[in-house]
Amino acid sequence: MHDKWLEDKGIKHKNFAVVTWSNWDCRVMLESECRFKRIRKPPYFNRWINLKVPFQEVYGGVRCNLKDAVQLAGLTWEGRAHCGLDDARNTARLLALLMHRGFKFSITNSLVWQQPAPQAITCQPSPSPDRSPDLTLLQQHKAKEMLGPHLHAHPYAGKAAGQVCFCGAPSRPNTVRKPGPMQGRHFYGCGNWTVTRRAICTFFAWAS
Ligand SMILES: [Zn+2]
Image (cartoon, rainbow, N blue to C red; front, side, top):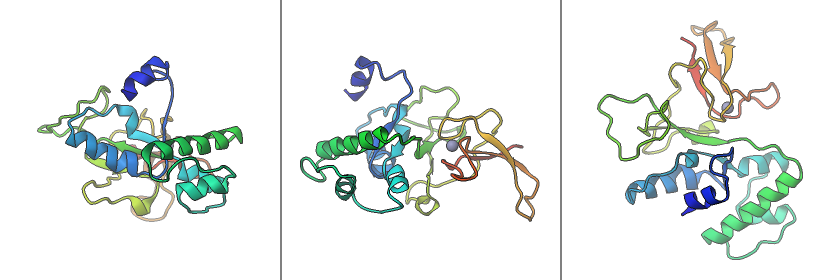
């Protein structure tokens, strides 16, 4: 239904992003519910903008729930808190407010794929030929959230040259400067890396 709505609105084949408050919806809930109900989850749900991240950037690192965030931004909360539809509407209003202020958004989190294991069995075929449908690992924006109970993070993303990072930008070549056994090795990281902002996503792959 949602997919058809995107199609009808002419959004589906454009550059768009799913926006959530917290990572729970896309990282845990939607994934497990789709598996449980054997629904093929469209791939655009595998990367999203957690509005908490830009909100904290704009409001000096303040941590609060969605309702407090909406009110802190000067908006009036509409509807019932934790009601899915009302939460979504209020998230959208907060997003619109930050957009009006000229905030530049980028993807904050994604689910990523490993190279296919030969015997991998899946009930969730991926339409993208360069990605394995075997959804076994997870990369997150924040290291402290990295290890979930049933998914594991993995620092190697395979052959990196020409790959895009999880934000969708061409991955950025770099060299390990830290003294140690890895010093001088080349790797690829987030394409949106800047000195001030650092990496936006956790993409990492050795160059060889
Ligand atoms: Zn990136």
